[in-house]
Amino acid sequence: MKNDRRLDRALLVLYAATVLGIVVHQGLTHVDGNFAIFRASFRHLVAGQDLYAPYAGEQVDRFKYSPLFALLFAPFALPPTLIALAAWNALNVFLLVYAIRRLVPGRAGTLALLLVYLEVVRTTERAQSNALVAGLIILAFLWMEEKHQLSAASAIVTGTFVKIFPATALAFAVFHERRLRMFAMTLLIGVAGLALPLLVTSPSALAAQYTSWFRLESSDAAASAMGGGAGLYGGVMYQLRQWLGVTWPNWPIQLAGTLVLLAPLGRARCWNDPRFRVRFLCSVLVFVVIFNHQVESPSFVIAVAGIAIWFVTSERTKLDVALIALTLLVVSLSSTELVPHAWQRDFFVRYRLKTIPCLLVWLVMQAELLGLRRSSPLGKCAEVGEADVATPQALANRG
Image (cartoon, rainbow, N blue to C red; front, side, top):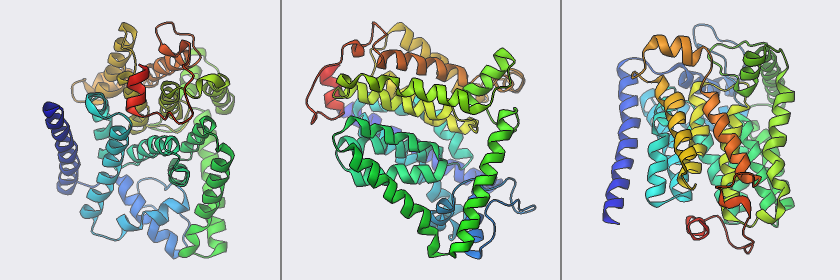
């Protein structure tokens, strides 16, 4: 127990030092352009300027988040740049750390945080919101398990207004008795989130912002379906176009993926098994990355978080170990200095290989959820009481 606490403190120090080191390095070189875009969005929102227009000379890319995100970024838009960057990165990193530790404490949680560490570094170097989104999805799951529906709905809505796809977390409500109340509460909070930017802008200006946002998202979706978008991985959709030489649009593949994701929910007798519910959480975390046509390399922290939680709560068979090793090699280590740049450019990036290990693990997760994998304890779900939430103790007792 004492050694566990020491290891836990050492891990927290590692994460804190990482946040500080990235801020110091960027202070001495240059702050990533994503953070400049986020900071400028609040100023543009207040001024009534189009959030989604290109601002040559000011931003390296367009702002692609919601008007609510621009409003909520105010605490990081007003202070000096490096102080704001430190606070933003710390929020992202430690929300994910907190969420994983809440879900899986002890040595298993420590191992999960070690497995996801390189991906946390990657998204933090780009000042992106992916760790925040992963943390919000996990917390939404936990808060639903604890029957804190208002907190869960708020987490889902916040994540959705950041990246859209965290709306998938609403599927967790299926496991609980008051699911209709959860759906209604999320809808109401979502409507409030749509209107909240009215605190700093006019109704007509806000309507124009949403119109512009929808136009930009539609344009990006069309471009990605044609293979466009520098730095985008394209998920499973890109892999199928590459392997089969087809030009299918994204939505049929995304729809098929959604049906596969939701198929295990047909096993209603398994809803009361905490292992089943946690495994579905892991599946959602991977799904929102590999079926996202706008996914970038830093986004894989969300999928790897799901894979790490899956691994530390699994039976850890030879197949499990092989899959986690493949994930670490192809997804995490392939983008580090340990791999020659020529290999990264001409092999890992060219063929968008990061999607493949995540897809393989996701298919194994789905096989477990469907009761098709013999080595999984989910073949025959235990019928336990509704009050048996997915706590680490419950998982351990049923493992």
